[in-house]
Length: 89
Image (tube, rainbow, N blue to C red; front, side):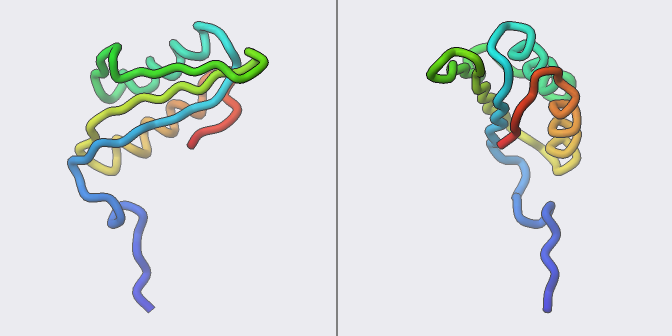
C-alpha cells in the first residue's frame, strides 16, 4: 500500500488559514499574530478575531500564502507556545 506523506497532500504555494482558539484578550491575539509573523509577513486585514458566546475565549483566524511545508510546521510549532492557547484547527 502506498503511504502518503502529509507534505504531499498540499500543493505549494497555497492559501492557508490558521485558526487558534484561546483566552480572550489582546495578549493571546498578539501572541498568535507574532507566531505567524515570525515566518510570514501578514497584513492586518488577513487577521479575523471572534469572541466566544460568553466572552471568555476567542478564535483567531489568519489567512496567509505558504510557500513550503516547513513554513506550515514551523508556524504550528510556534503557535503551540502561545500562553492561553486552547486549540489549533
